[in-house]
Length: 338
Image (cartoon, rainbow, N blue to C red; front, side, top):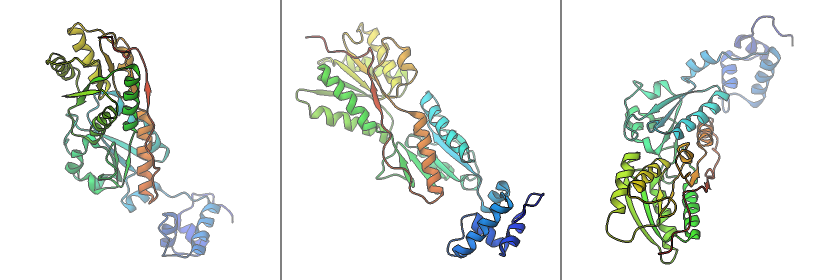
């Protein structure tokens, strides 16, 4: 079959295959099953290949109501973690002809202003962190194909969930501290109602409960350095045995704990050990460098976008949590003898 010198159209493909233009649209739009035969579909595909036909994606997207745009809903970008999530998601999106609109909640949690009259009219799907899930209702994003990040797989709003193995990260932290000899632990917990922080608290309590002679205290703080400083000072000046290690829900909380310990005249790790979770750039900017759990934010974003693309294509997303690992640095050491 000779190729035309001009750009072939769907009408050319229809004539070459001996079918209607509607049949060509069905086959090349992967909507032919149950409407045309396998033989006809193959004839259309063969004609399109021979003619070198390429569909007009912009026109096709308008006809199908597809914008090839995905919304990424995250907490406010106060750390580089969610910037990494965006970078990974946008990379995979670009490889598949999609764009990503970033939609941070301005206060870090809760609803954000609606950027669209209706998300359904402007988007093909949504990827959302459980920390910003309230924003979904405001934009009616929960009515679109949805992938949830850091969300309970058993009660997720989404068609799929993508999680980092946070429980294993907390397990690694706990085993590290127990191996060093720590038995009195303070948990500096994020004061954020989110599944991912619930998992951290539950796993830490479970692991320590299984170790004889341990004591766990918990104090909550907003995810800010000043909030963590205040909460740590309060916890450490309360009567009772002083903890020998502080387990922080993220690196920013750990930085606040550092400031509090120095104000109280305590040395890290000589007097008290500190751990974080995230492995942000902050972890190596403070002194001593922070023992923390490394989370691959870009891979997290990539997996989230891959899962959404699979959902849009009616396929099963990749299963299994993303591995994390403990990075041991100078902020942890054996406790001093009483």
